[in-house]
Length: 437
Image (cartoon, rainbow, N blue to C red):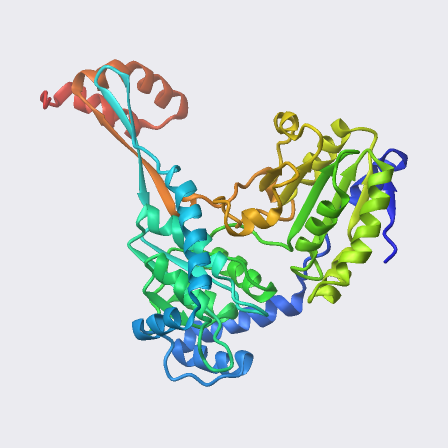
């Protein structure tokens, strides 16, 4: 592979912008029309459409969508003790970190007689979309299921495309069971998102849907979040991405392995190395050529590497500036003193510090969540957390004296805005109301 080395300093402003451009997301009219057609059929025909699309897209004829508890227990028994232990270990790690995020209600008396409260409650019903694709993703079940379990969402629904035998992977069902998820359906694609948004005979609608998916799933989430009142999605989604900041002290074998670990996700994944060391770039290039040949998904990784970037910067300070401009989903810092760079790094979904912190740790078992903003959204959107499965609302309670102490302020401002009824709602209480304290 011929990896192009880019010297940041020699680029014009526009060229720098082009270098940091993401691979284009397929957002064409045909995709939009295809997905809109699927959504319309699910809305009109309910379960019948789900069965038809499952046969068409997944190649399997189902007579029921719901996965039974007996199927879940069979799946657990079918797994080796080693596989089960790994899922349980990851579950405990993720649970440990997310439990620490449990919010507390806040009560403030802003002035005597005026009490304001910020309360947090779990979202009533959530849908978790788990892709199947070329391999099961029990890690994603845990990343979505654990926070839903901790905040105690009253209803948690899991959907996942079935395999050719009409079943879900044993690992998926075992992970779901750990998270206390009992409502599981063998359905995937845009049609599954439609079912969660509209509701069907078998699958009642949910308030919010979480989870990654292919471009059809992503487009369905986008359309439905704009069409269905009260239906929300977790975050916008784009291809996976990883940016690494390295220096002369970095281990090129580690960096190459990290770049490839993200490149194997998909041909549209983007991986970037920022470094002030031309020597490191040469070493990493050599390692990429060696290591990619060892991968089972080397063809996918090679396609992703074709639009990767190896960028030479003046110094690590400039590397931080470029990283902040890009706003990567994953950011690995493998420099001599990586902790000192944290105050300078603002825009990233998740940051991995030091030589022994691969992105794989966060994907599976360090405890942080691997559902992260992509495509530059890390500048404004946070990594998935308990807050995403909750809603916050305020409560206020005023005594008569409390209202009286604010009356002049409210009257003046309602005068300014010309809202007489707002003003009368205050003055009528103070003039006629009894003291109900």
